[in-house]
Image (cartoon, rainbow, N blue to C red; front, side, top):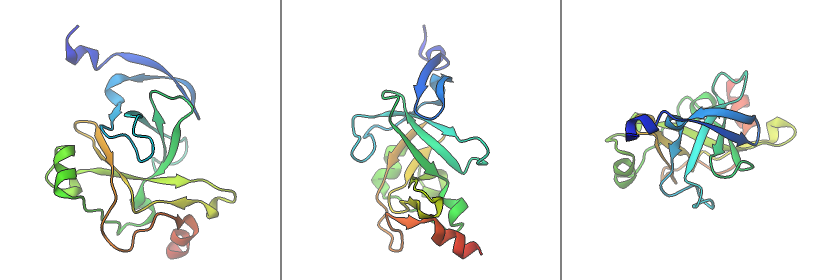
Amino acid sequence: MCGACARWLYLKLSTKYFGEIECSESDTLSFPRGLFAFEEETEFLLLPFSGSNDTLLCLQSMKTPELAFVVMNPFSLDPGYAPVLQPEELKELGVKESTELCYYVLCVVKNPVSNSTVNMKCPVAINDENRKAIQVILEAEGYGMRHLLSEFQAEEG
């Protein structure tokens, strides 16, 4: 089977939040370096939670069914969010500008939800064209690792 055909194979995958699903191998995100503290996990799926308008998603490990991270679209929280990657990170992802990438921030969900936090300092950057992704540490000031969701709700009124 040729490589192009193999990318369209459908797989059954057990997930933490969605049970067993069927997905296309072409939907896989490749993290050559893994995620921070999960370097051995190099393939993930990005799955939207129902009713979230693609602002709340699940980053599901392809290797470990019980490993899944809740991620959010940072621009839905802060429209002025402006991540800038280093030249070597851009090169690794195969782009010239930070604006060519998609970004998601990891969320620690707590009860009540307003006590949940998001890590704006260490987003996941994704090249949607080649499906490569990395987690980065932004050098810009003003982005922290534990922003309360309630901070953003207060800004919006």
